[in-house]
Length: 399
Image (cartoon, rainbow, N blue to C red; front, side, top):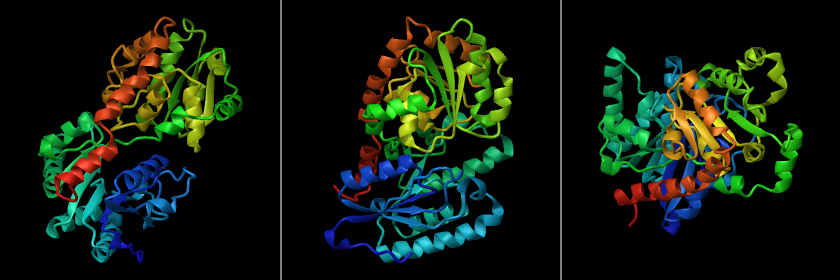
């Protein structure tokens, strides 16, 4: 960590500490750098991509410092045997922050020993620290002794931070439960590159349609997530089977990969297999966006989903949405009966009823049309760059 910055411009040095750099984070960091010229941003990446599937390079213009190559966060971050390494890594970051005279830290998460050390150090050395997390009150299900330990731990973290940057209202409620001052909570939602989705070239859309042989005369439901238990692709498959006969003009697109994929294919009745398209993992955001633009309804039936960026992507593309009621982004961007529905987590009957309603020929186009204005209205009050600016202003980083 030998990189230095030119502080002669007077810009305030700020470090954004993240696990990994997925494509959406590149877009957000570029926005921050462009739209808050009063600060000089460094992106410190402590781990590799958890699933190692994104092919995008980390661009130099977000000023990256890569410390965790070969260390996937999803596999290693919380395991006790890696705690000494995380502690040492935090020490390297602290030495670098001293050299750079960092004034504020935007801390992504609080779930490893290194991050706890950094938060504590910021508090002791009067470096403003803001906690970014997609924690969601509906996912806070600890009980008994575990709940007691978690309360002590999370409350301590919250007290040491100068502000909390949750994604939305369910995140705000979560941190208020652990003692966060409502006046020091600033919305900082994950977001995709909305302009990429809205202004996708027609040739990209057409190439994607041909790639997956999507019939332009049919309607489509999309699942876009890993094929793992917690995402509940099986629940969607079962619901689709139930409505398939009465919705003969609808197909199902399963976008993603994972250990459940073969099981799910075998679960389908033979007569429906031609109506289900399996794309595999899509590492090109343009292809994902094109798939949304070519489809009608996004379904996310997860049992656990603190935020879910796919909801933002879907409404930007003008899709209706059906999601389980624990999904953080759905609480912000799905209006019941207007642009979609939420259903009780794990409830196949309710999911089936929701699908039956949104796929009604008399309702689907109105629901799709409602998504874009709902997103635009929500963005007016929940823009992440505006939220970060308010947070930095609240602690006197600039006026």
